[in-house]
Image 1 (spheres, rainbow, N blue to C red):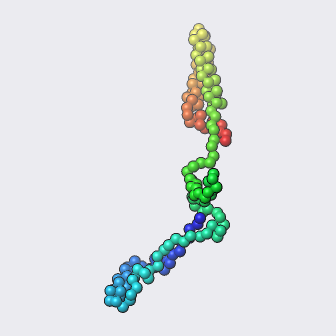
Image 2: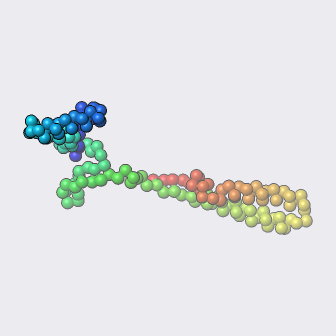
Image 3: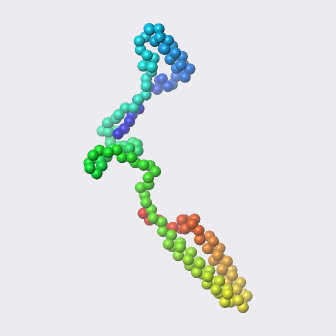
Length: 154
């Protein structure tokens, strides 16, 4: 179903004050009885006009379209622009496994530091590794990183 608007734009292009003056003059003329027509009858009014679907090639040009329901009866359907036709599934399993590995590595390094309390060089080296792992965990163990690195499928 299509709608076509027919308007006379000449009425709208004139100055507003000129329209008022012309309207007043026409009203005075009708009061005097010189003219039987009303001034409002002379002003073209914009209106909508129905266009047959055959003329519009059957293409809906709006959010509404005519179709058939499950019983074969004609029905008006609304195509919601906010409704998304695409559905995706996000998977963060890979990121979660990566974070779990980092947490396990962190625990192992902490245990190694406790067990190597006599060797200061080894403790420093393990603490450096532990600091790197903690820094990496701080960057990766959050929702933003999970969303960025999630895999999506339809």
